[in-house]
Length: 328
Image (cartoon, rainbow, N blue to C red; front, side):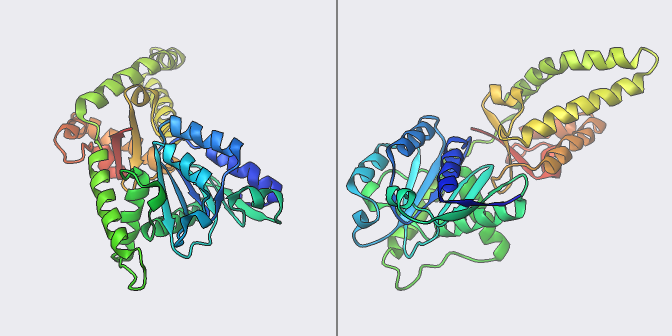
């Protein structure tokens, strides 16, 4: 459940969200003066190769919002997408599992001198709040441009980009440049570059790679499957099948809806399972995906063979659950 946090707790939650990022991280804060310890946490995220986004407020003088020391620090990050947005006042910190909406900037003065407060929530316990917050971050992202002080080759987060397209599709809207927005021309160029980057970064997992992952998962499950057969006894084949199905269901549904987004077999070959909009699978959706594999079995494995021939390398169970398997 969402809970209230005061200033001291807010900074603790910010630290936990940054350190706990496994695949995505969004930092939205108008003013940046990052404490040294927090820089160490962000460097660690960067070293892990997580594509993350930091959005601050755009001004004529960027240094008013981000000092020169932090500008140099941000330039050294290789996995970060550093952006600015006009009239930004929101403060939000979000990873793939947890979020914080707060009055606190990622700024030393906010943490040591100001009265601050916030609301912390998780995707598992508060999915509606989490999704609404993520959607709002996507909107801010849409209106932002790359920070001119830290300009680099655009790096796009797959979940972020896909979610942004998903929002526009659902609302039947097209991004429009605001006439009085002095960044509008740059914004259009930035979005075009980001689109090109997204298309080149997404790699769908093919049949043979997924077969390799399935073989690894099969080897892992051999021992628990054997115990299911022993437990059921030789005279109760259907009970053995049922127990094996339950074990497989728990293994696949739990791991693919967890922060890993993959079974151990998929993780071993560098694959993850995502929604069509780039977000994490819920346990319910991962369950539907696993149950959908039964349909492939009933039609002589054709549903699995489809992976090698469909545009996005989807099997029948992927189409039923509306999921994708991609390379990290």
